[in-house]
Image 1: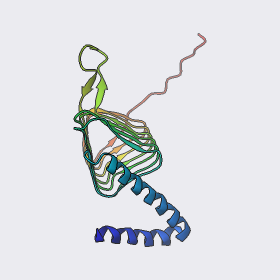
Image 2: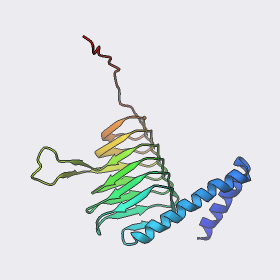
Image 3: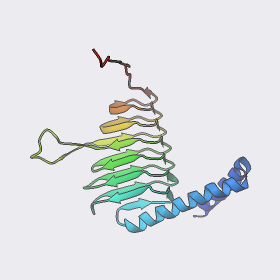
Image 4: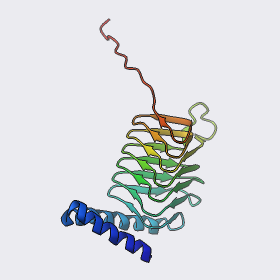
Amino acid sequence: MINILKKIFQTLVTESRNRGLYFAVLMNLSHLIGVLRGVFYKLIYFRNINCSIFALQTKSRIEVFNKHSKINIGKFVFVRRNTSIRIDFNGVLDIGEKVFINDNCNINCINKISIGKNTKIAPNVSINDHDHNYKNIEDEHLIKGEVKIGENVWIGSNVVILRDTFIGDNTVIAAGSVVKGNIPSNTLFVNKRENVCINRTS
């Protein structure tokens, strides 16, 4: 606990020098409110969430729908505004330390999702470890899979990560990509697209 308080104090001093005292106080007040919201969700789901200090900013939420669901959140995870984290069935969601999740992201877990430490996720990213079973409505309505995101990964804006996706360490996922399958470590993943204009009057 002493080390954590020391780290917080050092961060405050550094931010005050870089931003100015007024803006550093405003920013860290926002962070403090996010930490208190994290504590609130820990209290609500005390049997389901295993965590240290993490921040969950305004309008972001965690929803747990099953007593068997588990969320493990590492130290200093920061979730910005309007992000939705949902977990159901026997789902296990692991978020490593110092992961940053930006605005308007969706993480839906019913089986297994892991996000490695120091990973950065840009706005409007969707991560799902399952699909709807539209081909056979008589069986279970969801097809379960897994998503594993390595350490120190950068995921660009508006990326969709589908079930059975494994992203290696130090990988960059380009903005707007739809990702499924194995993505090797130390690579840049880009979906190639063609611009097609079709004349609607002919």
